[in-house]
Structure formats: structure tokens, C-alpha cells
Length: 184
View 1: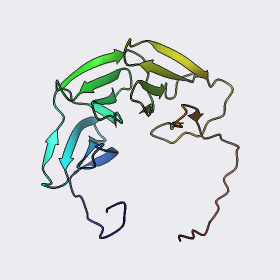
View 2 (view 1 turned 45 degrees about the vertical axis):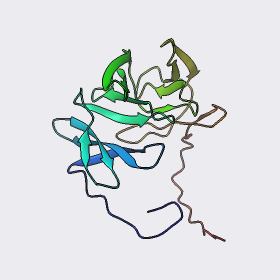
View 3 (view 1 turned 180 degrees about the vertical axis):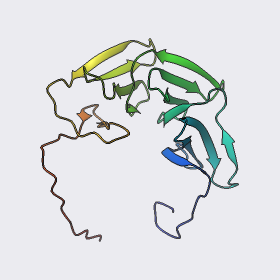
View 4 (view 1 turned 60 degrees about the vertical axis):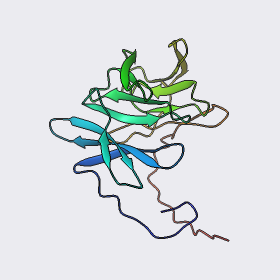
């Protein structure tokens, strides 16, 4: 559906477990991973929203968690095993290893210069970022004493436009709230 509203259009493009959907910067296509839960096989696709043609992202299979850079030049992802941070450059259509490390959730800085990621369910939980220019990995937050909300399949993190880290804190409460939404 258009951001301005309108008719909902179904995109019946995946066949297994579709996730990590990303818009292109110009809004003309989406990118997603389609994963078969057993034996953990995953393929990434791009779908042109005008023609509805589905094209696989070339080069690697069993890559998950795609995150397109805001400038549209790159795609970051990790292996199904979560043991390598990968970079795909759309101009060259090639993958490269950014870091051999445990990767959970990942996302880009708003200027496309950094990739932020956590190390998933590690016994030494932390948040890292890698500078795309020099590929230097730096730890920016130690989460050892932070009780974090996690789901069965992934962790979650966010980054504000000012590059402050957002995490969900587990307070031990399971309360559910209903809020009324008023739209002008």
C-alpha cells in the first residue's frame, strides 16, 4: 500500500518463511530472505514492484537477515549459522566477508557508514559496530548486566538517527496494554 494510503496489494512472492523485508531507497523494489526451516536453507530475493519479477541475489545461499544500506549501495547479512558478517555490493554483484564473528541482529547507520550488530545469544553479550571504510570492528556496549528481551529466533536492536542504541529491557513483567489510536 502506498504511504499515502490506498488499496492493499498482496505480494505473493515467497514460498517458505519470508523475513527481513527491506525497501529500496526509491521504493521501487523490496528485498527479502526466504528460509526453509529445515535444514536451514535460505535464499535472498529482490522483487520489482512494477513488474512483480523476482530475482535471486547472486553469489551465496544460506544467508539471512538482509539489511539494505540507506544509500542503496550495499546489503549486509549473516550466515544461517550466524558466524560471519557479510557485505554485498550491488554495483559489483559480489559478496565479501566483513568480520568472522557471532552476529545476531544487524542494522545500518543512517549515513550508511557503519553496520551495528549484536552477538546474538553469546555468553558475553555486546553491541558492536563496523566502519565500512576500514572494516574496523569496535565494541560499543557490553550487555553482561543488562536483562534483554529476546525472542526464540532472534535478538533486536535499534539505532536512532543520532546513533544512540535502542534495546528492549526485560523487566520481568508480562503485562499487555491496549491503546486507542486517534488519527487526524
